[in-house]
Image (cartoon, rainbow, N blue to C red; front, top):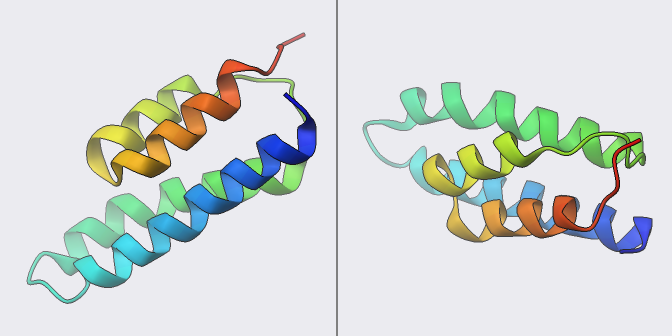
Length: 86
C-alpha cells in the first residue's frame, strides 16, 4: 500500500475518533471516555505525522476497534496490514 494511502486511513480514523469523542461528551460518561480516547487519538496523530512504515500498530487498531469506533479500528488495521516492518 502506498504511504499516502496509509496516511489517509490514519487521518480518517483520527477524525472519526474526534467525532465519537464529541458525541460521548454529551453523555454523563464523557470524562471517562475522554480519558481513554484522547491519548489513543494523539498516538494516531503521531503515527500520521511520522510518515514511516517502520512499525505495525495492530494493538492500537484492535483497541480502537473494541473501545472507540469500529470503523476507525478497521481503518488502522487495514493501514497496518499492508505495511512492511523492517
